[in-house]
Length: 107
Image (cartoon, rainbow, N blue to C red):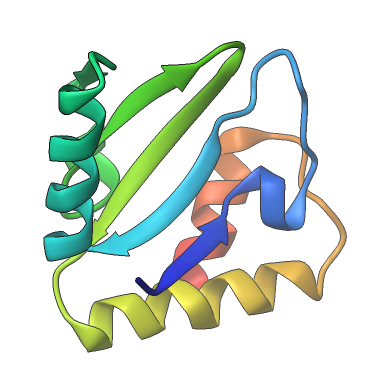
């Protein structure tokens, strides 16, 4: 299973009280993870905002950690997430979320 840790957990600024752990997975792997979570009675949820920023995905919680699973539709999409995440790691953390999202998109 290939995955990318992205978002503030990867490039900051991480806030343990409000940051998610963002993980990019290929659709097939995301679906397998969903099935595994449901088999273990772990609820997943998918607010409409997931569709505003990427190709879909879902959230789930384990203890106090909120996971955000982001779906990569294909290798090109997966590599875009990887490239942009690497670029974000090279700059100073951006505190403002909207500015951070715009900078991520600009790479």
